[in-house]
Length: 464
Image (tube, rainbow, N blue to C red):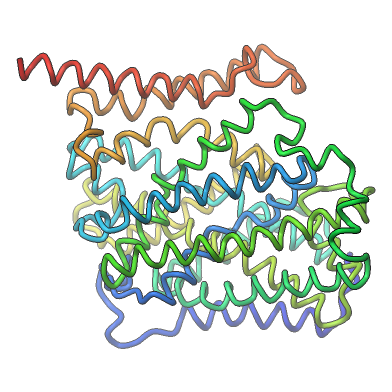
């Protein structure tokens, strides 16, 4: 068990109590479906930035794991590409989404392509935003804190605790907790970086001691591997949290400005997390589990009280995304997929049930794939090729798919990517890499582009 003082434990317990309080607190006017799902579309710029910045950084232990494995390529794979696509989202999509009456991506797809397409997209979105990676990270943190080996029980508790407070409070509770969490994020990592500098020397000295392998922008991997991560950053275009927050913004200008401000704050936070993890690589080479590099550094560097505060930082960073993804996946399953099948059931009730089902599925995925990086890579590689073009087609007519092809456009690329992934599992060893040396994302993307081209040819032949 990590050596925690009672002061550290009180801070962490106080944070959990604060989450419950913020989820319970509400105004009398806070009622109705639109408020529960989008805070009444009245999200101000500070609230927009706080909830978007904190939600985008839930994978903080995965960031540490990635840096430990591949060095500075973490920034080239998980930083730079997301800035690019977030900026494109801000300039070309945010306004259109705010002006669109749809509450969610599946609803927008249904309005554009029809009910069947909406149902298929609901399934894909539900899988895309399943909170499994974030349940895993909170469970790892709790296991380190409690020093227990009953990991599965901890995982179940984390999932259910999150489902309860998110389901009760709705999107407004998510936003309120995110404001607290984003403050903790920056305070904690500024603190850890400062102590690392004071104890282990300045960043220039650290860089000189860093093994050369960690200074390689590709992380020692082929360029095709790095390109896959760049393409996976297209996740931004189909990420429901971006769409939800843009739809919830007070006006289109708030959505655009909020994303631009967020990109600047992400750059600052990326710099802190990267440099801090590089310190850990130099000073703690014997670390057994790469995902725990930040907690291990805090355990060695920080005094009583501040150690607990940093654990709060990690916990808050992960929970900010866990609660958002739980809520969104519950909304996708309950409101978008089940509402037409259970027309007499209240949408809010369906969303709450969806949240609990999503939490259970998350626990199952953690049990099957107990790695943050693998969960991100596999989920993104398989699902994004199917969603990318149909989502862009909602807002840009040039990307709109012929309705006769839309179901194939959504499903076939996913089947191809998944089949390619399974082929690697069956026909290659763990160290052999992807099937035929090609990552699953690429065959799926080729299938997506091919089907889209066929739909355009069909449209042209009809017009002639």
